[in-house]
Length: 78
Image (cartoon, rainbow, N blue to C red; front, side, top):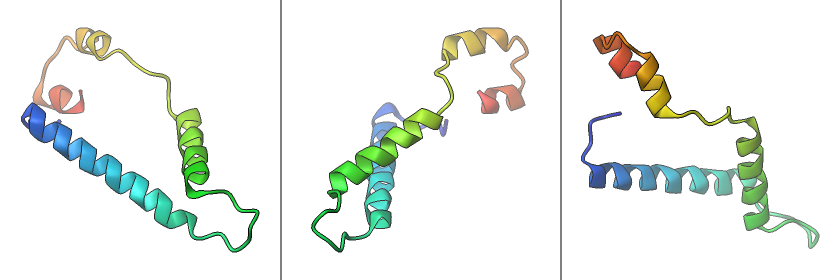
């Protein structure tokens, strides 16, 4: 999307993932009693909920094939 080198993109996405999961852990707070769930279980539950609401997967090759007019706006949106 940003035209990054492949290695730079991997680093960028890794950092974004770590930040996301760190934020989720911070939002869960601490448990006050002995019956609370562990942080791992809370994060897993949140990730499962995120996965449930995500749209169905799409095939990028099909979308690019349908975009016959490759104007700059179309390229940016892809």
